[in-house]
Image 1 (cartoon, rainbow, N blue to C red):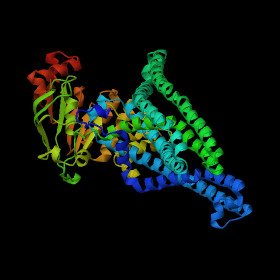
Image 2 (cartoon, rainbow, N blue to C red):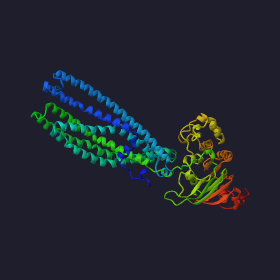
Image 3 (cartoon, one colour):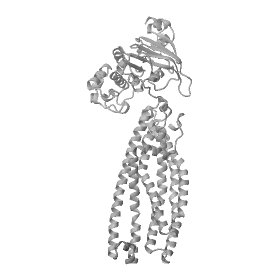
Image 4 (cartoon, rainbow, N blue to C red):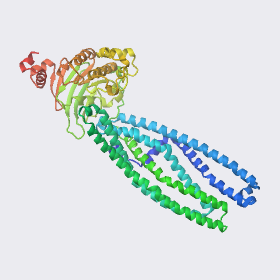
Length: 603
């Protein structure tokens, strides 16, 4: 995860990080917290009323309420009835308000945090995604943020009300009977000590639970994405076994956490029982001896339970708190992941781009591997079509990733129209480049929506013209709903060639000054390749085009062909020039065409 990023800074405590996240909503937090406190104060009032009622029955005309002018017993009971109605109504009102405010806060934070995390995720370099797991990222964006939402929905209110109870009831008991209060406070240090100990032991267990949840989500994501391979190799039983192992690991980590958290409440109950029995006996003796009023004793007996029994929920509250903090750390670690490829500041107006490209002394290697490109130089004049060929691993596709700034060059620089691409606004740079890759990704939606992806304001006429240029209109019109046919997730309802032509139509609609075809015909049949080639003859006119190909027939008519070997440019020239040189390109051509050397020269 992001916490392991080499440039990541040490994380602050989870609660401190969460409070910083809540800063924009401080007014809503204060309102919700105030309603929680007021609700608890009114909730604690009934024992006071009980004590006053007992005082009225026992002392009658000399009861405490008589001092306010209510000298008769019926009058005092009437006052108590009115107070009871007001207190119950206020308690209900503030319960409604705190539930409303905390839930709105939880939903708002959940919404904003998920969008912020996803937006930050989109700005991270491709190396981050290649080093991690999409399933684990899904667990962070979904499960962990939902866990935080659940804590804000319930746990924060429970913590506040618990603190309010201890302070309010403890203060009242000290004021009424210091001795009884002292006895009732005896188990509180034990409870707090036990809570802290449990919290420290629970924290790593819940961190492990969240890690196992991420592993499980990753396994599920991989299996759903690879269902065709699983079925074709009859590996269903094997994959079920692997999933069982991951699920069992998640279950076991949860079981270890549950075993510890479940032991908390029974242990706390014994500490509370000791205090309650002591108060029952000591307070009763004081009332019997006249040291405290009977109503005060009744109040103390009832209020002691209101003080101590809520502490039994401390285990569950801390349980929710630890789960939430583990999730908070994972979400905020993602947000703290540094953006390794920052945008430049110089704007690049789309209409001003000519498409002149230069690679000057570019050196680049993937993390943990030897440099793939070493002092690489290449010049691509504006409006020209350049074919790039070479064996697998020679660095062809890497050039595309560096040009799009999906990775950062380690030495040298790349220039577009004489401007270093690191100085250009990243969005403007990528809008100026259209990419059609071998691995076409179509989104769940209609054909028209997929063609218009990235050109979201395009008219239906423009979409259909782009499809026509991509030689895709005929098969699209033959689909059940034509351009409104839903392609399914990843375009699974279409063939590979159909997906490829939709991707080409998408790039045509974008109308980029620079077009990159990265193995765009590698996985299609001859008919589809011919259709794409006819399209290219039209759309590459007066547009800078880089065509990366294994099939040399795709680049045969390029203005210039460059041959890469081990990250080095070893040959450059037209198709005919390279064939007559008899070098690396001629060998590749002969192998693909199945010709002898003399036959290759005659073509």
